[in-house]
Image (tube, rainbow, N blue to C red; front, side, top):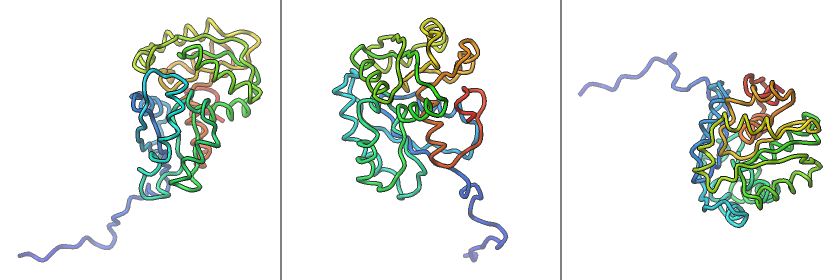
Length: 253
Protein backbone atom coordinates (compact mmCIF):
# COMPACT_ATOMS: atom_id res chain seq x y z
CA UNK A 1 0.00 0.00 0.00
CA UNK A 2 1.37 3.41 -0.94
CA UNK A 3 2.18 5.80 1.84
CA UNK A 4 -0.28 8.68 2.20
CA UNK A 5 0.93 11.77 0.36
CA UNK A 6 0.77 15.10 2.18
CA UNK A 7 0.26 18.50 0.63
CA UNK A 8 3.13 21.00 0.70
CA UNK A 9 3.11 23.42 3.65
CA UNK A 10 2.52 26.37 1.31
CA UNK A 11 -0.86 24.97 0.24
CA UNK A 12 -3.34 26.30 2.80
CA UNK A 13 -6.49 24.33 3.52
CA UNK A 14 -8.35 27.43 4.59
CA UNK A 15 -10.27 29.82 2.36
CA UNK A 16 -9.14 33.43 2.80
CA UNK A 17 -12.72 34.66 2.37
CA UNK A 18 -13.66 33.20 5.76
CA UNK A 19 -12.10 36.26 7.39
CA UNK A 20 -14.26 38.72 5.41
CA UNK A 21 -17.54 36.92 4.73
CA UNK A 22 -20.71 38.06 6.48
CA UNK A 23 -23.42 35.50 7.23
CA UNK A 24 -27.04 36.64 7.50
CA UNK A 25 -29.23 34.00 9.14
CA UNK A 26 -32.62 34.24 7.49
CA UNK A 27 -35.69 33.08 9.38
CA UNK A 28 -38.30 32.82 6.64
CA UNK A 29 -41.85 31.51 6.53
CA UNK A 30 -42.68 28.02 5.32
CA UNK A 31 -44.71 29.60 2.51
CA UNK A 32 -41.93 31.98 1.41
CA UNK A 33 -40.14 30.94 -1.78
CA UNK A 34 -39.13 34.48 -2.73
CA UNK A 35 -37.03 36.17 -0.05
CA UNK A 36 -33.66 34.54 -0.80
CA UNK A 37 -34.06 35.32 -4.51
CA UNK A 38 -34.98 38.98 -3.94
CA UNK A 39 -32.13 39.52 -1.49
CA UNK A 40 -29.57 37.98 -3.81
CA UNK A 41 -30.83 40.11 -6.71
CA UNK A 42 -30.12 43.21 -4.66
CA UNK A 43 -26.72 42.11 -3.41
CA UNK A 44 -24.00 41.29 -5.94
CA UNK A 45 -21.27 41.07 -3.27
CA UNK A 46 -20.33 37.40 -3.01
CA UNK A 47 -18.81 37.92 0.44
CA UNK A 48 -22.34 38.16 1.86
CA UNK A 49 -23.84 34.76 2.58
CA UNK A 50 -27.47 33.93 3.31
CA UNK A 51 -28.14 30.89 5.47
CA UNK A 52 -31.86 30.22 5.80
CA UNK A 53 -34.23 28.16 7.86
CA UNK A 54 -38.03 28.02 7.88
CA UNK A 55 -40.68 28.53 10.51
CA UNK A 56 -44.21 27.22 10.11
CA UNK A 57 -46.73 29.73 8.80
CA UNK A 58 -50.42 28.85 8.81
CA UNK A 59 -52.65 30.30 6.11
CA UNK A 60 -54.56 32.53 5.87
CA UNK A 61 -52.33 35.36 7.09
CA UNK A 62 -54.58 36.48 9.93
CA UNK A 63 -53.34 38.42 12.95
CA UNK A 64 -53.74 35.29 15.05
CA UNK A 65 -51.68 33.13 12.68
CA UNK A 66 -48.99 35.78 12.35
CA UNK A 67 -48.73 36.09 16.12
CA UNK A 68 -47.97 32.34 16.30
CA UNK A 69 -44.56 33.00 14.69
CA UNK A 70 -43.19 34.10 18.04
CA UNK A 71 -43.28 30.50 19.28
CA UNK A 72 -40.97 29.43 16.44
CA UNK A 73 -38.16 32.00 16.72
CA UNK A 74 -36.16 30.32 19.50
CA UNK A 75 -36.39 26.94 17.75
CA UNK A 76 -35.25 28.50 14.48
CA UNK A 77 -32.22 30.08 16.14
CA UNK A 78 -31.26 26.75 17.65
CA UNK A 79 -30.84 25.28 14.16
CA UNK A 80 -27.80 27.46 13.38
CA UNK A 81 -24.54 25.83 14.49
CA UNK A 82 -22.10 26.63 15.90
CA UNK A 83 -23.17 29.61 18.04
CA UNK A 84 -21.54 32.72 16.65
CA UNK A 85 -21.38 31.48 13.05
CA UNK A 86 -24.09 33.97 12.01
CA UNK A 87 -23.36 37.71 12.17
CA UNK A 88 -26.98 38.86 12.21
CA UNK A 89 -30.40 37.23 12.01
CA UNK A 90 -33.33 38.48 9.94
CA UNK A 91 -36.93 37.45 10.63
CA UNK A 92 -38.41 37.92 7.17
CA UNK A 93 -42.03 38.93 7.79
CA UNK A 94 -43.23 42.53 7.79
CA UNK A 95 -46.71 42.00 9.21
CA UNK A 96 -45.36 39.56 11.81
CA UNK A 97 -42.76 42.09 12.91
CA UNK A 98 -45.47 44.74 13.20
CA UNK A 99 -47.59 42.47 15.38
CA UNK A 100 -44.72 41.02 17.44
CA UNK A 101 -42.45 43.70 18.90
CA UNK A 102 -38.72 43.85 18.23
CA UNK A 103 -38.15 43.37 21.95
CA UNK A 104 -40.21 40.17 22.04
CA UNK A 105 -38.52 38.76 18.92
CA UNK A 106 -35.10 39.42 20.43
CA UNK A 107 -36.16 37.91 23.74
CA UNK A 108 -37.24 34.70 22.00
CA UNK A 109 -34.09 34.43 19.87
CA UNK A 110 -31.89 35.06 22.91
CA UNK A 111 -33.40 32.04 24.62
CA UNK A 112 -31.26 29.86 22.36
CA UNK A 113 -28.66 32.36 21.05
CA UNK A 114 -27.96 34.93 23.78
CA UNK A 115 -26.73 38.27 22.53
CA UNK A 116 -27.49 37.60 18.86
CA UNK A 117 -28.35 40.53 16.61
CA UNK A 118 -31.76 40.51 14.94
CA UNK A 119 -33.63 42.64 12.45
CA UNK A 120 -36.86 42.36 10.46
CA UNK A 121 -38.61 44.25 7.66
CA UNK A 122 -40.53 46.49 10.06
CA UNK A 123 -37.53 47.20 12.26
CA UNK A 124 -35.44 47.93 9.17
CA UNK A 125 -38.13 50.18 7.71
CA UNK A 126 -38.50 52.24 10.89
CA UNK A 127 -34.74 52.71 11.08
CA UNK A 128 -34.68 53.60 7.38
CA UNK A 129 -37.38 56.26 7.85
CA UNK A 130 -35.30 57.79 10.66
CA UNK A 131 -32.16 57.74 8.50
CA UNK A 132 -33.96 59.42 5.59
CA UNK A 133 -35.89 61.91 7.73
CA UNK A 134 -39.23 60.45 6.62
CA UNK A 135 -42.33 61.30 8.69
CA UNK A 136 -45.23 60.83 6.24
CA UNK A 137 -45.62 57.91 3.85
CA UNK A 138 -47.89 56.36 1.27
CA UNK A 139 -48.25 52.61 1.81
CA UNK A 140 -48.94 49.90 -0.75
CA UNK A 141 -49.48 46.42 0.69
CA UNK A 142 -51.04 43.07 -0.23
CA UNK A 143 -52.75 42.71 3.16
CA UNK A 144 -56.29 42.27 4.39
CA UNK A 145 -57.80 45.36 5.99
CA UNK A 146 -57.26 43.91 9.50
CA UNK A 147 -53.56 43.21 8.97
CA UNK A 148 -53.00 46.54 7.16
CA UNK A 149 -54.56 48.34 10.13
CA UNK A 150 -52.10 46.69 12.53
CA UNK A 151 -49.16 47.68 10.31
CA UNK A 152 -50.42 51.27 10.16
CA UNK A 153 -50.87 51.30 13.95
CA UNK A 154 -47.27 50.13 14.37
CA UNK A 155 -46.09 52.93 12.09
CA UNK A 156 -48.20 55.54 13.89
CA UNK A 157 -46.79 54.40 17.24
CA UNK A 158 -43.35 55.19 15.85
CA UNK A 159 -44.46 58.67 14.71
CA UNK A 160 -44.79 57.70 11.04
CA UNK A 161 -48.04 59.01 9.56
CA UNK A 162 -49.65 57.08 6.70
CA UNK A 163 -51.20 59.73 4.47
CA UNK A 164 -52.61 57.25 1.92
CA UNK A 165 -52.75 53.49 1.56
CA UNK A 166 -53.96 50.80 -0.82
CA UNK A 167 -53.82 47.01 -0.94
CA UNK A 168 -53.95 44.15 -3.42
CA UNK A 169 -55.99 42.19 -0.80
CA UNK A 170 -54.24 38.89 -1.62
CA UNK A 171 -55.87 35.85 -0.03
CA UNK A 172 -52.66 33.91 0.66
CA UNK A 173 -48.88 33.99 0.19
CA UNK A 174 -48.96 32.10 -3.09
CA UNK A 175 -51.37 34.66 -4.54
CA UNK A 176 -49.41 37.69 -3.40
CA UNK A 177 -46.09 36.31 -4.70
CA UNK A 178 -47.74 36.06 -8.13
CA UNK A 179 -48.35 39.84 -8.29
CA UNK A 180 -46.19 41.20 -11.09
CA UNK A 181 -43.56 43.92 -10.50
CA UNK A 182 -45.29 46.05 -13.16
CA UNK A 183 -48.58 45.88 -11.24
CA UNK A 184 -46.74 46.97 -8.09
CA UNK A 185 -45.10 49.83 -10.00
CA UNK A 186 -48.40 51.09 -11.40
CA UNK A 187 -50.20 50.81 -8.07
CA UNK A 188 -47.36 52.60 -6.27
CA UNK A 189 -47.55 55.47 -8.75
CA UNK A 190 -51.32 55.73 -8.40
CA UNK A 191 -51.47 55.98 -4.59
CA UNK A 192 -48.53 58.28 -3.98
CA UNK A 193 -49.44 61.77 -2.82
CA UNK A 194 -47.48 65.01 -2.75
CA UNK A 195 -47.77 65.13 1.04
CA UNK A 196 -45.85 61.83 1.49
CA UNK A 197 -42.09 61.90 2.08
CA UNK A 198 -41.69 58.31 0.80
CA UNK A 199 -43.51 55.29 -0.55
CA UNK A 200 -43.51 52.20 1.68
CA UNK A 201 -44.14 48.74 0.19
CA UNK A 202 -44.25 46.20 3.02
CA UNK A 203 -44.40 42.39 2.74
CA UNK A 204 -41.58 40.02 1.82
CA UNK A 205 -43.91 38.28 -0.62
CA UNK A 206 -43.85 41.15 -3.13
CA UNK A 207 -41.39 41.22 -6.05
CA UNK A 208 -40.02 44.74 -5.76
CA UNK A 209 -36.25 44.51 -6.36
CA UNK A 210 -36.50 45.32 -10.08
CA UNK A 211 -38.71 48.41 -9.73
CA UNK A 212 -37.38 50.36 -6.73
CA UNK A 213 -35.06 52.60 -8.73
CA UNK A 214 -37.69 53.16 -11.43
CA UNK A 215 -40.29 54.12 -8.83
CA UNK A 216 -37.91 56.54 -7.14
CA UNK A 217 -37.19 58.28 -10.45
CA UNK A 218 -40.89 58.49 -11.28
CA UNK A 219 -41.99 59.70 -7.84
CA UNK A 220 -38.97 61.82 -7.00
CA UNK A 221 -38.79 60.43 -3.46
CA UNK A 222 -37.42 57.41 -1.58
CA UNK A 223 -39.10 54.02 -1.92
CA UNK A 224 -38.71 51.66 1.02
CA UNK A 225 -39.57 47.98 0.58
CA UNK A 226 -39.60 45.04 2.98
CA UNK A 227 -36.63 43.10 1.54
CA UNK A 228 -34.60 46.25 0.92
CA UNK A 229 -35.07 47.69 4.43
CA UNK A 230 -34.37 44.36 6.13
CA UNK A 231 -31.22 43.84 4.05
CA UNK A 232 -29.98 47.40 4.67
CA UNK A 233 -30.41 47.06 8.43
CA UNK A 234 -28.88 43.56 8.54
CA UNK A 235 -25.79 44.79 6.69
CA UNK A 236 -25.45 47.80 8.99
CA UNK A 237 -25.72 45.59 12.08
CA UNK A 238 -23.05 43.29 10.62
CA UNK A 239 -20.69 46.21 10.00
CA UNK A 240 -20.97 46.25 6.20
CA UNK A 241 -20.83 49.83 4.92
CA UNK A 242 -20.33 49.60 1.15
CA UNK A 243 -23.00 51.39 -0.96
CA UNK A 244 -25.21 49.19 -3.13
CA UNK A 245 -26.58 50.85 -6.24
CA UNK A 246 -29.58 49.99 -8.41
CA UNK A 247 -32.16 49.24 -5.72
CA UNK A 248 -33.09 52.54 -4.14
CA UNK A 249 -31.50 55.41 -2.30
CA UNK A 250 -31.54 53.60 1.04
CA UNK A 251 -28.97 50.96 0.07
CA UNK A 252 -26.49 53.66 -0.96
CA UNK A 253 -26.41 55.12 2.58
